[in-house]
Image (cartoon, rainbow, N blue to C red; front, side):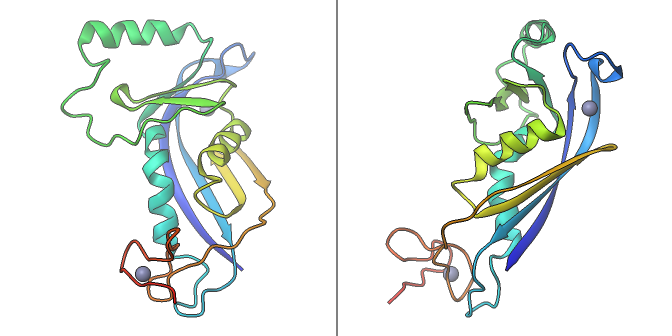
Length: 188
Ligand SMILES: [Zn+2]
Ligand SMILES: [Zn+2]
């Protein structure tokens, strides 16, 4: 069965080099739906608690929220960094508190201190699905991702070949020692 959760991400981006209005800087509220598949853990009668899927995803994905997302070859990138530098906010500001953990994958690098994500490819809805899967595939048994942004939407399905041992008391994944990191339950 599947547990499904949805996150909202507000961001600014543009399609550099695209011959359409999206080549201008603009913003969206993007909606990401994450579907996680596994057996139903009998103790809690859930596949996985949705708020925990949400928390795990948000730790990483909050880097995209209220962020600027630019392709690595976009000339806006050095221009924006130059302004941030001159303004003294490139390396952080006291009001920039909702920072995620910095990440670097093949497809994207996050700079939480200045709320910027630099991507290898244009950040279309399809591009975002590739980025998100890369970031979360080892943390969650993702079988499907859907991302919508304005009138654009894309989805992709992924094979799942593993099952996670979960806590029968709170439903979250047990660690390598078979212990629940939340409530301390130990698998016998
Ligand atoms: Zn857009
Ligand atoms: Zn537990």
